[in-house]
Image (tube, rainbow, N blue to C red; front, side):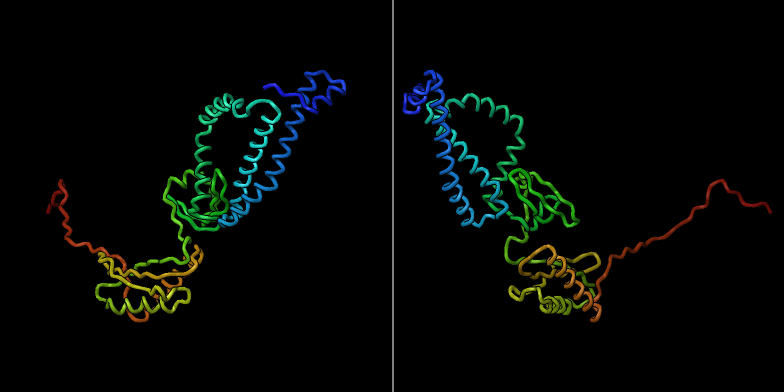
Length: 295
């Protein structure tokens, strides 16, 4: 599209520049002016609006960084497109269509995994299955989320190992988030002997749960007979804790189980261990080829 003559071009021609040079210079000046105008408006209006929208949705501060970067890139793209047309260089999108199509095909084939992880990262930001600081479990792994980016999520295991996990591995797997709610139910099976009083053991288990300061009274602790094993009767204790975290989970369960074991010892309730009894006879056959001694 030919650029119409304007005051900028006329001024440049009066300054002694040839018409083709003046026309090109006019287009370049218009491009720069239009780009700066759109860019300044975008930085002053669009980016603050996006930041406020993310804050209103209570998106984690660390998670806002890549989203703001994407918005900034979008403003830059729009500014170039508008400036391209305003300067008379034609339709930016049409001009870029051929290059974009070929580039997209090559990039798509070479970066399938990267794109998959990027899209998965967007889903993690929007769906919020977990956030930084949460304790999560998936497949055979577990740990605390330290960082979420658009490509990978970094998880610190309870052995202090750092796992860098592709986002697609998390969106394609079942992820358990025990800390998502404000309370968590824990379960533990106590095995008692067949000759022990089930009601007495049940009372001990419930009483020790009620005594622990970090175990909730509502919902109340419960006990159910769930197993009849080879050597014991399984009583499953169920109780709730508030504001769950991995450290609290391990500590509270350990203190509670220790207290129940101590009460069992005091009241003579047995916690049996598996015993195997072998029955039968043993017969020794006389080896062949041994003759009686001569008298």
